[in-house]
Amino acid sequence: MNLRKLFPTMLSMIIAGSFPQFAQALEIGTDMPMTEIEMKNVDGNMVSLSDVTGDKGTLIIFTCNHCPYVKAWEERSVKAGNKAMKAGFGVIALNSNDPSEYKDDGYENNQKRSTNSGMMYPYVVDDGSQLAKAFGATRTPEFFLFNADGKLEYHGALDDNAQDADDVSAHYLQDAIDAQLRGQTISVPTTKSVGCSIKFYK
Amino acid sequence: MRQKSRLKALRIIAAFAVFLLLSQISITLAGPDEDSCNNAPQLTAVSGDDVLELIRDHEDGPILLNIWATWCQPCREEMPELLRLNEEYQDAGLRLILVSCDFTRHSDKAAEFLGSLGVTFETYIKEQSDNEFVNQIDPDWTGALPYSVLIDTDGNVLKTWEGKLNFAEVNALLRQLD
Image 1: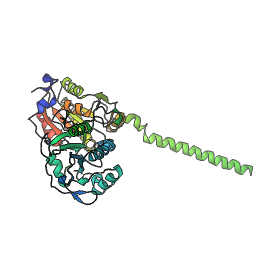
Image 2: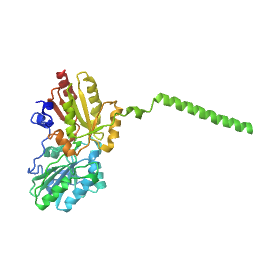
Image 3: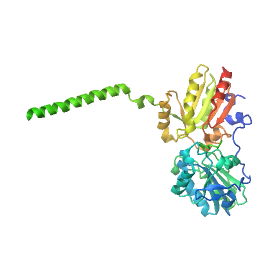
Image 4: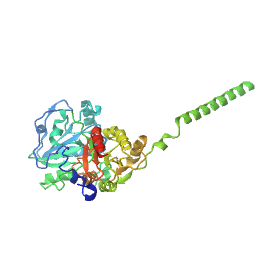
């Protein structure tokens, strides 16, 4: 196929099917995977996804310590996580990066970041990037919201403006949480943002 | 006493003159203001659709699209090699399209980084919501950086890379096009 002749056909239409190299993210409606894998929390205890599941659902945040894009969203992200907890969701943040790639992503820095940012929820080491691989997570930050039955309801970004909290026009995650609490269908179940690629353990 | 004071004053003047002379020498050795000659042209703001149009408009050779950011370490690491490739395949008509995903308020930082690597050609910066930009470029791209696409002269997508480029692979593909 010819990209120029097909313009403005999207690049993906040419790529689709030809180069299935990207990790396949969980599809909406899929069951939460790897719920029994125990991961080391910042308090030293081992925690699994099934340990944190909430009555209203579960929010899983793939994040890390070094990424400036994560830092740009940090305050909003922690606020959203804490708010979701208060609303009855289980919340957990995972660092899936190999710390040998980035020293900032070592366990001690998880502890510092959890304290400094005011996370009320567990922040665990995804050793071997097992969960990131199972979820098809590729970047940080990346959010997965499951309902009370453990089915994926929303996957994607926190909102539509990492650069400036005052200029956010779409609160993707909060809208998804609100819709889920009201028992409504989530109007935008998947979104994307650029972000730091997860440094998978080799 | 008065003579001693005069001598002291002369010594201070002489020391100041030597200082001025040495400063001038060091400025000459360092060359002109480095910042002023290392800055690449200001980045042009684009949407995903604008990028696709740039691709369509280049008909004289292959295209290597690279989407990067100054805050992305792998992006910074691979940039010198990308620029070397660009030089090597200039005669084959290769166009390297660099699109930064830095915040637009950090455009100068991106220009400074590119300038430090000797970039003088026009490059671009995303000015659109991430969701729209990523989906316009390629719905199969998850948004992780860096992201690169190699397109041949006829507009066929030869390969995409999410994460660092495999330069051996790029070289092999470009050589086939020669």
